Image (cartoon, rainbow, N blue to C red; front, side):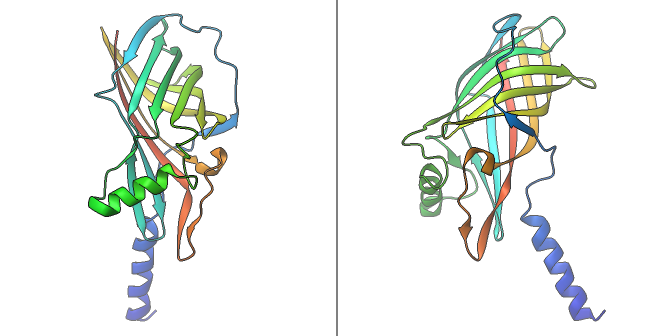
Length: 209
């Protein structure tokens, strides 16, 4: 292979790698489930709306964007085995923030994300996650399942999360990928700058007993 072709192949490899969703476990998606029978059983922890972070990374041909979704309120219950027996939290889609742009570009993208092409916040200003199940895995890792509602559509997802309880505090950290099409977020982007369906979600939530 000539040097020119090797150089082109290297450029294409880097370009492709930079515009894929970050590598993370794929959340298992199924139809909405009934909440766990252990609703509000166990030790209650109120989620901090100041310390927690919920960030989505969306990618397209030309790059990627990081979007933060403010936590409005939430509470989880932890049973005697250390599993999240139930819980629910609400995020403000209407107050989403683009983290990697500034000025007019930031305002333009935020406005577009709030529109009908994406979250349709005029009709659905909030997203809701409600725990429906929890299974112990290795170490501090739990497999948490819950109903995620976006744009008025609810799907059940299961993903791994590291949950640590230290006396009166709880911290939950998770990183996983979902397919936005499952919630009817179908905007394709420009013909020469298509948006990928896989979206990376990272959670870092703090709670107080």
